[in-house]
Length: 379
Image (cartoon, rainbow, N blue to C red; front, side, top):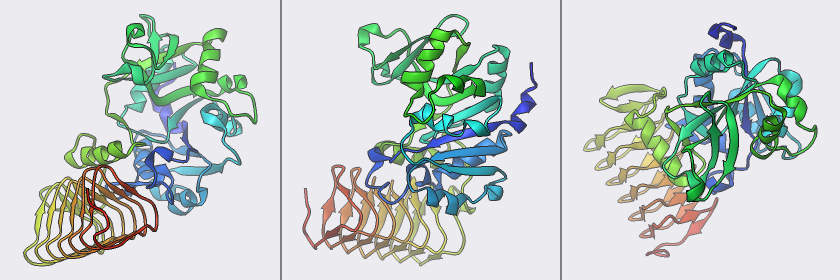
């Protein structure tokens, strides 16, 4: 058996080819893996965790807005990694995307879905994979309602026996689902047809059950969430701020549970209640109340007597006097005029103009560059 230290030489492929339709309008201008979590792109959180666990080389299988990955990540050296951005001309599916970069792989390779945040112990998973003589190992996580997912049934030795997609309640025998992290030996991609859309779940994995190549499940209770839904996006920011999953914040902790990145201007008579992450160049005017868990992106201007609670703001938002934000998300470069309330899961995309005395709630979504006149929306 190879030493677990072999992770230092292992490669990883991250599947980041999707359009992020479930997270629209936030993903209209930003690929889902590039959306910020606690003021750092989600993909950077992933890459930093891989680097910490000994992976040195990462291949990103990208189709949507690939230049944003190149501009942000470069060659990966800033993060201590070698990063390759491999762009697909057309959708290849999960297995097809890896087949497309098969020439860059050798031996066991970690494969990750690019919309899952987890603190899974990769070294432990690799040790399990090696001890079983496995060719394919699938990380599994328990869920409360298995009928909404694809289940993975195993025998007493953890060898995979069956896949069951969104079963009826009476057919459920396990609550373990595919957690979107795999270790797959490069040889297994000989079963994937080239230049075709092909999936792991409905293609390669069922084929491996038929061929008898050893495939095992690796159950884990580590933190796991899919960031691809709006309510999950808010929750995962909260989980990071309250410490349910440990990720590094940009900046320094200036007070208990208040992190500030770079220079900010905070006027007198401002109330800050953590946990908060505040980006560089932010101005918070007098009388504002900022209550965590909240994230404020770089270069935001928070006007007098603004209240923000349980919210996520990306960069360069401008909130005028008396605006109230509660449990909502604002993308980049929005202007919100005085007295407007945004709450109850509302999402505002990028570069919107929202007039005075509006009320946005009940999960309303504003698409990029929307213009809302004064007193136009109320529930």
